[in-house]
Length: 356
Image 1: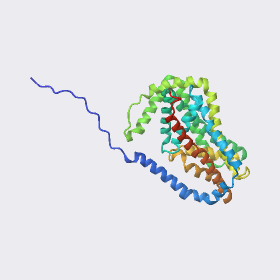
Image 2 (image 1 turned 30 degrees about the vertical axis):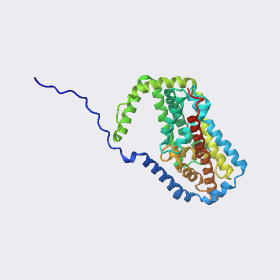
Image 3 (image 1 turned 45 degrees about the vertical axis):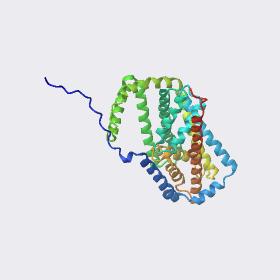
Image 4 (image 1 turned 135 degrees about the vertical axis):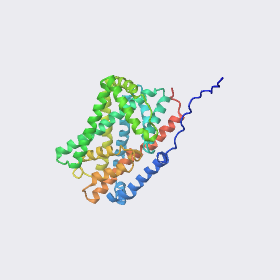
């Protein structure tokens, strides 16, 4: 009689060695290095730190106070976007989760994804379903990108009316128009039919597999089913709230722009020296460039990009004023949310009043 060996299931493959360049400390080191090079080497070539500090020190309490109020309004203006894309989310909950996630995004390399996790963790503790938070994150992200891609087009149109367009701005605007049209078409196709949504889901899965294969993340994600389910949820949300979401998103982006424009005027940069359409163009294009997550919150890249874009061709004294305005603007929009977000995180950790 022949003995039979017991059948055992194949052992799962051992995980491959972790690639060192994917380690968090490498990303952090690269971010710190980029920031150090920008502020230590490139930024002094476009502005003088001593003159910049003197300009900031000369600002009156009234000017600083109005800038602070504008910065606070900028923070508040985004919360209606969040309550618009997520029915059931209260304004105070949107404020706490948004400030905490922003603090993470502004300090941690690749902090945008971590910030989404912070938002989901907080909202789940408040009794809000993860599926609703994920849907809100997707829709708000799509609408924010629509506005980001549309602003350069609007800025170019305003500059064309004034006769201030150049080949660089024109090329960038055409690229922005192309990307915006492509994004709108894809989003429209996703919502057109269940079959089309499944096709896009399968295409996205193949693309993600091709990108993730070199990193050991090639796996079936069943994105066709997820895309079909997502389509119905998005249609239901947008059918009732698309106007509200669009208006609040535009107001939020323009509120951020208003802080920059007010900072320029308060440090002494006049409309004749840098007209507001040029400020809008620089603001819009630099925001597109800073979307690449090289440093947390675009630290260094935004400061250098805005100062160079707005100060090119101006006298040295005006360039220093522009740099001062940009640094004040970033202090109020990048730095200010960090301590506020830390306070919101501490409140969430210690308070049980909102838990459900």
